[in-house]
Image (tube, rainbow, N blue to C red; front, side, top):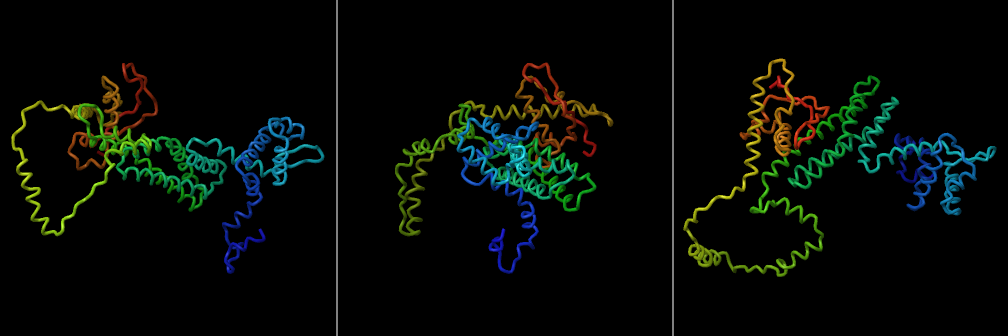
Amino acid sequence: MNSLAEFFRPDIAPDTLPQLNKLTAAWPYLAVFVTLFRGGEEEVLMRLLVLRELGSRADVPYWTPQEIAQRFAYLNDTKLNTILGRLREGDLLVYDSDSGRYALSEGARVALSALATLLDFAGDDVELGYLTSQVAAGQAVGQVSEEAMQHLLARLTELHDEFADALESQSEFRIRAAQHRLESVWRWVQKSTDVVRGLTQDERLTLLTLTQAQAIALAQSRMLALAGTFERRLAQLAAQRVHLGNSGLTSTDIADFLRRQGSAWLANLANGPLALGVEPAFLSTPELGDVAEFELLGRERARAEDSTLPQAATAEDADAPELERLLEAETLYDSLLEMGLQLGADSDGFPIADAVLADSYNETAYRLSLLSLLGDPETSNDASVVAALARLPYQLAGGDDILHLDHPEVATLSDARLLANKAG
């Protein structure tokens, strides 16, 4: 650390920086990671392998040289000696000359514990799960890290921005990908909510920590509020799809097919139409263009214009699926109105199965999706039946358990209930 001052301006004393002092105070532990991760990827990986193996024996944490050689018989002797030598030089592996045995140092145990937590979350949305676990661990031992809370807040803000950008893009594919990402991190958001709720009830917290906990709670609520927006935006995009005749294909199907093709296939597809470039022809002056427009374009259009009415034909029932969904929404609206008239002032509502369960799975799923729109403020100026359904004075409650149904197509359904919204 003697050359540390070279990194700073002459008028700056390194020991006056609080953040640097915190790092230098923890340098004995940071040096452990320097030893582990210095060198090539293969060397780092093998050091971690050997160190984790040596730390895996909890009942007898001491190793004789013979036990080490037997445990790592699958490694090259020269390479193993090099790894053990590096671990001894970095004070990760300590040799007791009296007993003739090796043991892991305190810093090595700390490093292995941190690595174990990270490895447990690998491949399972590691960043949000790991950050949440750090805050939860600090809460459990009564030592919450403000830095860990800052990282959790930053990650939640990044996720919210990603979801908001996907919605602004108006791309069905990006919105579906963002919706899938939200579902993958949902359980960590719920866990984070529990942790933050516990933090806000702790009277020992400093004002700064309490402010950060409240900011995390706000970021979570903003992100979770987007869940209903995804469904609503996808429904709007579905209504804008172009149906390609009676083929059953839509513009979304074509776009999805093209997205899955390779660049070489797409380039070959464009060879024919784009083989020859368009050669534009420019008029010499604007006046010449005005005079020639009628002669070249207007006169020919007038001759080619055909005012004959087409023969009568039966209109194609292209909007049948949309009409069916509209009828389903009207049926659900009428059912909820009728059930609402039967509710008393102190009624505990009625199960959603009474309103959404239909003869088929598709009808039941569509009705269930409409319930998520109840109380949606964005439908206040809309005159459709879906908007009227969203303005009904109901709210969802319960839903912690699953009902097993005797139904030909619907096996299970939430036990949630619809309650009269007293505020409505």
